[in-house]
Length: 446
Image (spheres, rainbow, N blue to C red):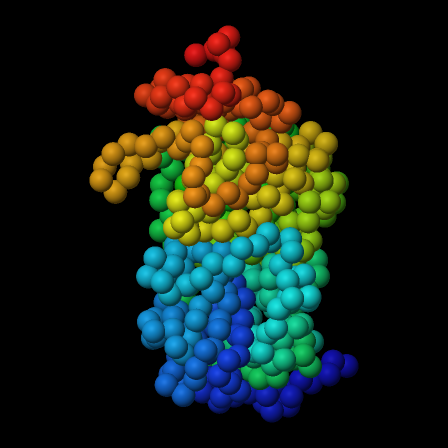
């Protein structure tokens, strides 16, 4: 006979206002990630602004608005931090209302276990099951390690959250929860992702020949991964797998096309593995109680030694710019924070070590600045830009003009390869810069 947890549930139930009363000035609060944002608790905490000082909040990939950030431009009361900026958090950074925390995702659990203090964690979960468990849902990648280290655990039950099956740490038991908050939530909205550009599709076409039947894919998020998903869905490739920190609609497209089976994986066979998910309501419906997927903490998903165990692991990520030395800037434009390091380094190392594995970093060759002027994404040399991936770890680089491999290549070979995939309008200028830096041979191909 199952134990009845309803009495314990009632004893721990609080209004949002009652629950946030435990927060004290100077506390560190965690909102975890993605759909884990505690909407009701966030509003209730913001309402206490005038009586609290120097309360610091961490989150990542949060959709807006965040009441604690929006209500206090002085930051005397609340200070918000992000491990990886969403488009909304990027706007907060631009306004000086968010501070980025440099990190690599496979160390996320270790940061909390060894270095950080969490006074209160507030996290949205799916409704409790008959066994007394709340599911962390598409927030599994980061939630459990944070909750384990928190002095006080408050769960906000969101009736819209999908229940996601997991490898481990996908749930928290009521016995580990201090307070439970209920309330009505708005349905999740479908994000308006930019449509794949002509350049995105050309890059995706260049990548297809490098992917074999039975390969396992890690795709980032945005127009390029969506283009890759669309083109693979229309290709002859089959029996593909998923092992990714961030699950997006690109994987749903592959599944609906019959391409995503996970049958050939060496670990987690038959399971599409992910840490967090951001996408459409159709994506969340697909993930809900699906035996074909498994959510894990990022300490597992992003561990290079785990990734390396998967044959033909293909990692596809994007960047903002690269210089002629092969350094990659993927999280900032100059000093402006755009996203975060995330798992790019994790998958560069892990996929490169996989038997038959390949790690791609992709970008369009040019971009338009705010004034309308066209700039090359391939720079002579970074000066003040934040480096995400060092030149020693970069593998394949792709633009709409082709794909090059930098593994084991010298400085002049790198310069030659990078200029070959730069926009033609900038190649002579880049050659002159390479010559000035003495990384161009007279015999180099132009």
